[in-house]
Amino acid sequence: MSDIISALKAIATANGALTALVGDRVHHGMASQKSSEPYVTFMRISDLPGRVYGTVTLSGQRTAHFQFDAWSSSMTSAKTTGAAVFNAFDDYRGTSDTIVIDKILMEYGPEDTGEGAGEFRQIIEAWCITDYDARTI
Image 1 (cartoon, rainbow, N blue to C red):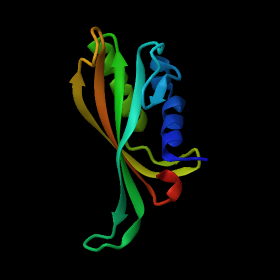
Image 2: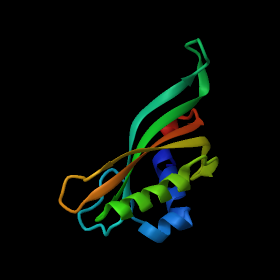
Image 3: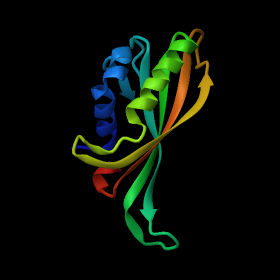
């Protein structure tokens, strides 16, 4: 069954600049411990049904908030990978894996040293606006 998670992974792995850096190492949730660097992980932060302004009436759209993390063994590489993630998704409009995406808005988040020595990440936030559909939950 198609959902927003598989749609986002399909967008990422279809982008030439991003796959040149990470190949197919785009993971929902956590990456395996054997994942080569650099790689990308992403998770849904929230998912809000759209409302007609000033009412409780559903608008027919929803906004899902995702966090993407670009991981690498150097901050320079993590930032380069993060920029590729940003460019792969920013202002995306279209259909991916049968999910209609009205627009994706991207924002750079903080840089971080991760949990282990020699582990760096660039955080990128995404807001994905889709048509309201139970399959996107």
